[in-house]
Image (cartoon, rainbow, N blue to C red; front, side, top):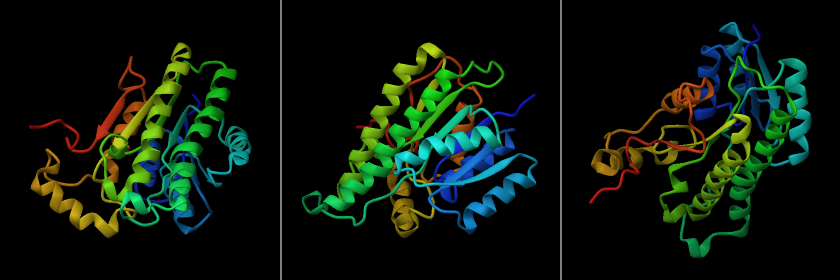
Length: 256
């Protein structure tokens, strides 16, 4: 039986790497994307190959919309019909600070990667899903990795928050559009996760988690997010779509 096939964007490090590896552990062949074919991407492909799954290094810039079609075509030619898209690629702000001082360059960068690229890659994959016969063996799904900041404000990163909120709404829009075809779309919102991107501030994150920001008094790991994503990709949450899955240790639970 053919293996399920997933595309993971921003897969070289952090949450993306953990997701790609966990998908492979669960029997997926993986197309691993990053903006360039660096050593981290090659190491990921080698690690997946070592598990006995097929892996494809797929370097392209998600913000270049013209690359989406050729990248998806290469997946189909090399691995087969895609069953899962994990939109994980993302960027932070160029400089933390007052929203009154946010630069147009930082705003545009966040929107381009975190919102626009995600939207149009969803679109490209959705068109292919709808044009192909439904694979009854493997559920088809799109998982967008956004952020708890799609909901909760972080004043020093306001443009990031705005971009993630846009991405979260796009997830709902695609869920509404694709539900009739049985294609699930989810918005996974990580909270305080220890990754290379958060390394400069992880000390403060740990202190805030311990001080009660999260119900669990610790920060999460990329593997926590990966486990949730794979549960969605393998259909272990049946009869669900359009939902926000918060992987945040209870940070967004309202309290008084």
